Length: 176
Image: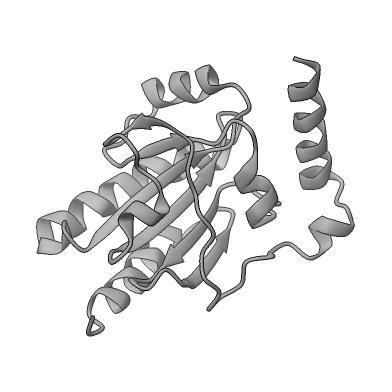
């Protein structure tokens, strides 16, 4: 329990106060190969992780149960995914949602309030926070079919979902 509190305190300090690491927010940049994003599968097929979705356009969305903007963005992303699936992109696009809470039960309770249809994994030990150097939530990475980061979004605001959809469609329309 103490370890989880220490980790949470570090994450909050990096997000709120800032730190030397937070000053250089992204270790993973546009054009880089996206690191693995995985964890305990809360929703979706067993073994779901970023590498299992290779060949698809993937929106990797990092969030936490305490994140107000995450509460707003996730239903919009779910609606965008449903639209794209209705437009015939079900086999070519997916959202992988990664909960960054240290307590899996908090992520489960969040998903009871904010129901989504896409796969969700819980990164309870914080590998994603360290690998991606997450400094703000939600943090969203658009990954192309080859597994490279095409766009990085830090936070959420007006126009977010429309911009994401436009960029996803542009990647979907590129030849494989």
